[in-house]
Amino acid sequence: MIGIGSILNNEISQITDMMTREGVQSLVEVFYHPTFKTFYVNSLDGKSFVKHTGVFVSLGMTTSLKVLEDIKEVISAHNGYHACLAEISSKKVAGQFLNTVTKLEGIEQYELTEFDANIMDREKSMSELDKLRESMNIDEDLDTLKDTVPKISKLSSLITKLDETDGWKNHLIQKESENNYRIFHRLVNYRRQGDVEYRIGIYVTEKL
Image 1 (tube, rainbow, N blue to C red):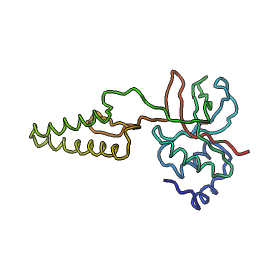
Image 2: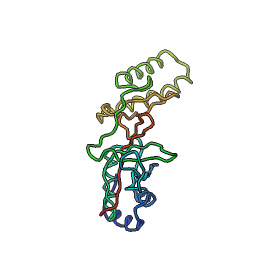
Image 3: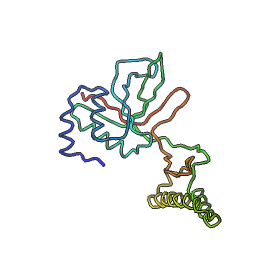
Image 4: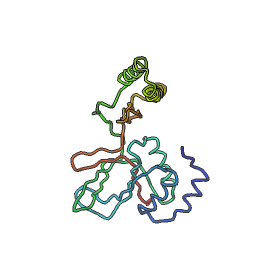
């Protein structure tokens, strides 16, 4: 996914900002194109504000730890930055977000354990596929068949993909409202507990 070689040296040599959210964001944008967020870490104890101690990079909610590690290495290759995987907590105090690093070791994604009825494991997905196939044998209406065939193809391909990659451990299949299907990630980088938000991402500080 990411080539760290001469292209990296050329790109990061052009980024000369002191460590600001904008500077870190400019560096990450070179290698990570989906939307992401950056936050100043501005509290040491989760209770009071301090001058920011670093920048936290929050990539996509379902971005894998492998990609997080790759981007962390990209940032660390910058002469002025140190980067590591981390968890932060965020809560609103006096109209501003108080962001605190809560963990720097043993970083793991959050596992979702409660699911809506439209989230299917392998057994439910196979049952759904069987029902679609049976409906084709019963209903001979051309418009209905045209609508059902793509659903069978999509669901079947997702089941095969998860089977071949041993993906059922960390993924399920979601039946969307329009009866489309997509991969559902069980491991995520965000959770909320009361009025506190928790994120898994990359903590960036200036090298001493």
